[in-house]
Image 1 (cartoon, rainbow, N blue to C red):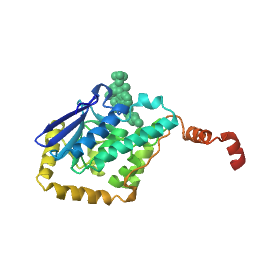
Image 2 (image 1 turned 120 degrees about the vertical axis):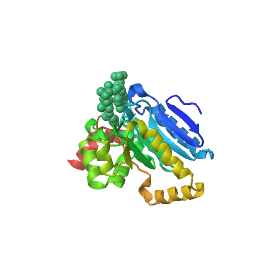
Image 3 (image 1 turned 90 degrees about the vertical axis):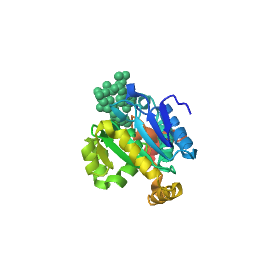
Image 4 (image 1 turned 60 degrees about the vertical axis):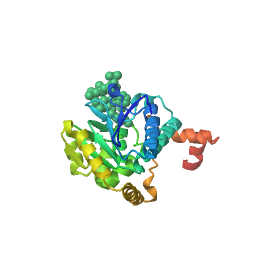
Length: 258
Ligand code: COA
């Protein structure tokens, strides 16, 4: 498969999928999101692939979030569509029938942290940084972070990260359970490959059953539905929805709220 924004190498049954926009710190534009979903589907269907490593190009970033230039020009409905597309693409990694390991090689911010969390396991290089800074941009996490982060680190710690927008380093991410372990940057990919190959030594059906069972433990809410309104405001989204329904927002406000 050829992609515009991803690199894919498959060696002895292990796929390495790299988000390849290093000049933009691998930010997730619409093309990356679409291609990630396509790649996840193809790798899941390819029975010769026994595991997947997901990483970012360059030494600085895994993924530095949603592409801010695209966010800046979207209206609320486009924001909703962007969120739903990202949620669907990320869910394809989370529900893959073979192990997916995120090799987090630098910034994993916003959508980048969310993408790492949608993978089954996360290894971090010692220079990795994590955070959900959306709140600082007037947004909420659009790709499932508000669901997956509490599951991984607990509600209180998740809320602190989500509400402050703080960035944490790899050791802190390890301490709170966001990543499985921290390894020197120059050993990250080798460690990720070792982990995937160890799992691949086990029976594929057993691996698949365990992945399905653990996903089912996420409950009916396993498929995160989080609504991002765009960079302006939630009010704007509500006004737009009222407009779509043929209602005048000022009249509705006067009638319902005085
Ligand atoms: N979307 C689009 N472009 C991005 C981006 C993003 N999320 N993150 C980084 N870039 C681009 C920068 O615009 C810059 O492009 P340019 O060289 O054409 O101007 C390039 O990537 C390098 O980024 P830069 O900011 O110069 O690197 P830095 O080392 O000074 O800072 C970060 C690194 C990650 C701290 C900083 O880029 C940043 O804060 N990015 C936004 C993170 C974010 O808020 N993500 C969540 C979005 S919801």
